[in-house]
Amino acid sequence: MTASIVAYVDIVELIGEFAALDLSKVRGGRALYIPSPARLGEQSPVVKLVGMAAALKLAERFGGTHIDIPIGPGKRARVWELKEQGWTAGQIAGEMRCTERTVWNILGGPRPRTLGPAPAAELPPLLAYLAER
Image (cartoon, rainbow, N blue to C red):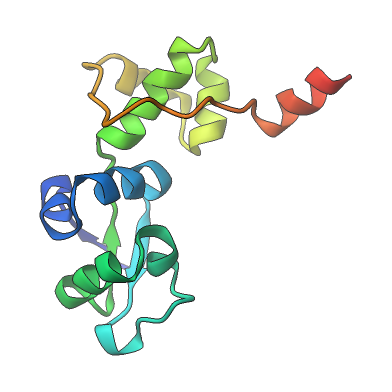
């Protein structure tokens, strides 16, 4: 499977900044299959992620291919938010499904802006289990 590399600004132009931020938080750094417009359905993963209207825009441009969802400011901002809440790099890496090196690279750069207050972070499953004891 070869995925097309897409710039974050291209995603923003197609589906808007809020949807692009959400998409980058959930799938940033990973490939996502975009079905053709004719095959797009309510159960398509892209529809579940961004809604039918935004998914249709993505399908019209990238339909029938895999695209690499860029790590936009949404995912970077989430890493910063977790760090500011006291999470370790290892905990953040587990939550964000990336390596600790990626976490440190993100934290080594500027803090991205967000479009609003972040929801309170939950403890990773293992820590939540240990906290109950």
